[in-house]
Image (cartoon, rainbow, N blue to C red):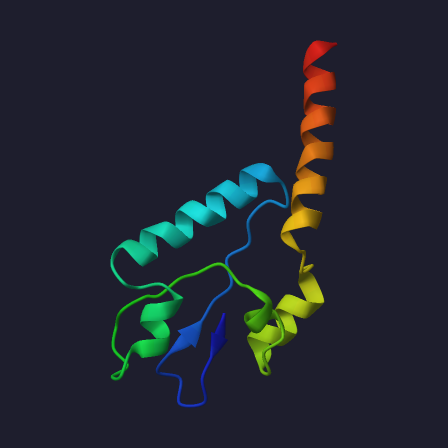
Length: 102
């Protein structure tokens, strides 16, 4: 959790598994916030800070951002392209399928 200077608001990073299931969970998490306009677009267009919670999946602009959240993402996460992610998931599915067949 990352608090701003006056301690009145905070940002948090929620971690998901680094596999296909984690991506699905993260996507569902983001969809829940977007349904009420509380995703990244809602955050960027808000004019008055309030008690609303916003949530979205971090992307390259979050990863490359200055500040504690960007620092944390670069330190603990790995930014992947869609192609890299699909390749990783294909490998994971192949291993899962092979284990299931045994």
